[in-house]
Image (cartoon, rainbow, N blue to C red; front, side, top):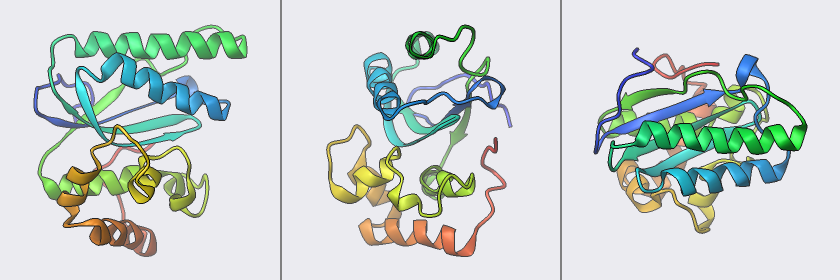
Length: 186
């Protein structure tokens, strides 16, 4: 897989990165919310968010590029802004994230659905907890309880064939412990 490929307009991507040396990038509950706020501030003009999951040492996003112009620069500014704030908060220096964030092109509804399920169930995959449905820092919660979200809830439900199938496919992945051979692993 080409993890550092260029961005293209109207293309879906699974974007992810982790802390430098696998270290944490989130230290307090406020950090998760700050990350999402900065993501919106720096990248809402360039992309749409369809799913996310923020774990203590890495994150996953499913996005669609609206305009590719300056998107790499906007990602750079986003990561820099977040890193500076965390470095100040934790009295650390140096790079917070691994050098280059990764992205994988996602094409077709089955692949989009598989990526969303993978992203939402990632806390269980990494054994952070046993029930992904209770994880606070994932778009899954906002899909279930109709809270305000930047994620494109209705479009995602349509890919799955409705709300019930969205829930069923997530549960099936956990119950069957399905492999993710085409998804990234940290």
